[in-house]
Length: 208
Image 1 (cartoon, rainbow, N blue to C red):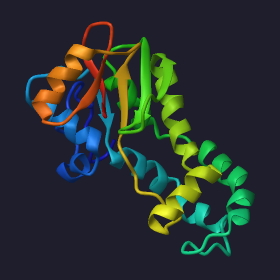
Image 2: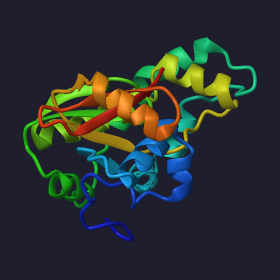
Image 3: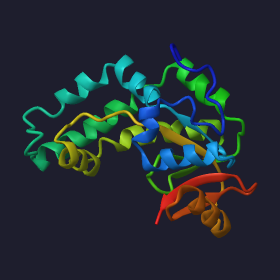
Image 4: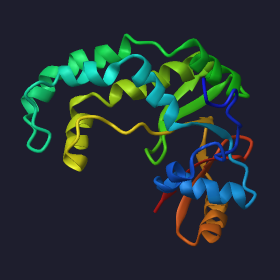
C-alpha cells in the first residue's frame, strides 16, 4: 500500500497509530499485554486500509446518494431498509487494490485456519487460507451497510458515514484459557477473559 507498511508485523500493534489503539478497549489491552511479553498470534490491519478502500473507489459519495431524504438526526428506517440491498451490493462489487491484497497475503505468516473480526467485536468469522481472510475482510465492510448496522450507527453518532476501524486476523481454532485469563487480568489490573490458539498464543481478550 502506498504510504503504508509493505508487510504488517505479526504479533504487533506498533504499526497502528497510538490514537487508534487507545480508542478501542481490546486493542489497548492487547498492546499492554504484548508490551509485557505476552505472545499475540495475529495481524492488525490498520484503519487506513479500510479508508483507502472507500476513498479510492469513491464509495462515500456513492453510498450517500442511496440515502437521499434521510435525516441522520431523526432517521426514517424505511429509507434505510430501501437502501440496504443497493448499499451492500455497491460495497461488494468493488475490489481491494492489488497492493492491498498483496499486503494481506504477504503479512499472513500462516495459510491455515484464521478468525477475522473487528477489535472488541467478539468471536468473528472463522475462515481457511489467505483467500478466506480476504473474503472475510470484504464481508466485514459489507456488513456495515445492513439495516441494523446503519441504524445503530445513526443512533450512536447521528452520522450515516462510518469511521474506518482496524481489523484483526488471528490464528485458529481458539479456546478460552482460564490460566492465561487470570495472568492477563493481573497484568491489566482488570478482569478479562483470554483466548488462545493450539500453540498457546493469545488471540483474543474480552472484558468481564
